[in-house]
Image (cartoon, rainbow, N blue to C red; front, side, top):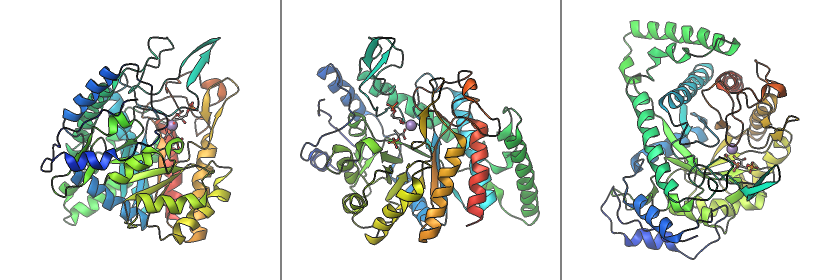
Length: 460
Ligand SMILES: O=C[C@H](O)[C@H](O)COP(=O)(O)O
Ligand SMILES: C=C(OP(=O)(O)O)C(=O)O
Ligand SMILES: [Mn+2]
């Protein structure tokens, strides 16, 4: 892998390039899960192109999100992060993006109304194009090829040429991300996300118990709004909603060239997304990914599995959040329904002892993945709910704050996770399994989860 990126200028320009390069260069650290790009010159060209592109997000927006995450760390807001496990270029269509945003808006409405807390809406979107893998290769019927590592690296098609990493995909990922975020911004600021349209977000989705419950809730919201309106409330203030973009900062050849100096403060921000996180497989304290997030001022997350060592937590805090600044660091725990009650307390206690101000978010997906009898990578809806229950229970017992959830979902009617009110069975998985990586909650399962989490929040 070449380190030949060069941030030639910052778009929020004022500062020279030097501070950026010296801050990011540092001693070379091992970077796990990076593709082996076959052509250095092609990589250099792609990285240079990225360096010259405008930022996808602005530093000031990242600061707003930091404040929102800080509110969630105190229990004054609740974070909803959700979206595909792996976005694909082909699926970055208007309909798919709209349905994912609608699903998140509906889930947020359920959580806000049910629990009376503001919901911080964060899409796993507009940058979630790179995947860490358990194995470097994939074997099908005796044929072994390099693993698919996300559309930012290679193609999902099981063919030798398709699986060769192509650095031009870094540039395509940038364009797909800007197009996605552009539409998301249009939906969320152009009136579509206005709470007065709360009924319309449900349109186009098949009627089920979760959708019927949502309709009832939407009627209640309508009624409350009519009452407030009669009292003179200004609903134009609700025409727009804040919506943020997040992804795993996995490919440093993508994240580094999009890191820019903020003209207001001279600080570095990764402008590829508002919130970035480091995954379970790349969170080594001496590795390049943790080093990278120490250098940028975005709000950042680190995933923690049940294997997390409490001693790790203190070291991580000192590196990533030395000032213990609320909103800066989020721990995204993904321990599994069977482990969370045993593994989470030690981790939270270590953080509390170290003076942590971090936000705690539950990812109930990644510790609950298994292969079904029919051979699909899947998750059980009940395990997902049970992990969130465990997360709430542990925080309550320790007097700490459950600050949000992080889920893999789609607005589409897929059959990837088992269970839910529709009772998706193993035999149903082949009907509409479209994920190129992990199984996602479909629209109805997402909504159903939101109702259950709203109950947990309301019981707080
Ligand atoms: O989120 C994605 C997956 O959990 C991760 O990429 C590992 O998947 P794999 O075990 O199929 O490689
Ligand atoms: C790979 C992922 O998660 P984790 O790092 O927690 O395994 C993911 O969020 O898709
Ligand atoms: Mn995943």
